[in-house]
Image (tube, rainbow, N blue to C red):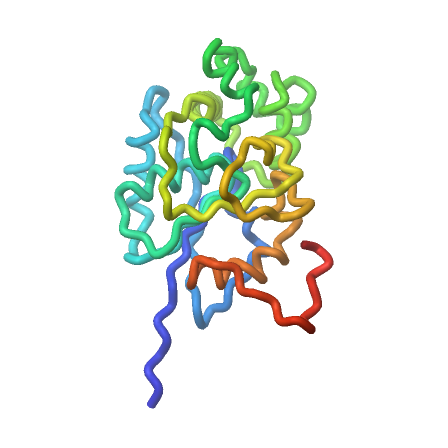
Length: 238
């Protein structure tokens, strides 16, 4: 009797304020993978990123896992990874270090302008884009509006503060970075050593899910994208 294949546990962390529903079309074969969806918790107003990441560890119940995060969720999983022994660490539409943040976010960090973003207006999600200060939050509202799950001002203030002020001088060498060349929030020209998805925007986890369905299994298991055979058709969505 053939021994049952051991499945890889995959933990998915959504982007800022987003619901795990952003992964609803990402399908991983059940005989190879078991998927666990992580959700945001409301932080303490002055909670450190390290403290928050440690708190999120209570939702991880397996070893040798694949930990995948999108956008600010990519920052969170990198912080969580410092306390875990992982099989794979993957970030999508995110940044590996402070130097990959776009100039506008660095400026907001230096000047403290992020503090005047009217996050209280997030309770009016349908109108959020009209009132949000700066391209950063406007893009966030636009990209995640249909998947947004948290409009709590404490969370949004904390998340924006920790995104623009994230301190990371040296990225984890093991991190696999997947990035779209049309990303509006984290422009690809500031990104180094990433797998580039042509035409991919900041929400490609939603609208380019076929690319992830095709390539994530190999990335999780081997750390590399599976090479296509000569006669194999290229997915038109790539």
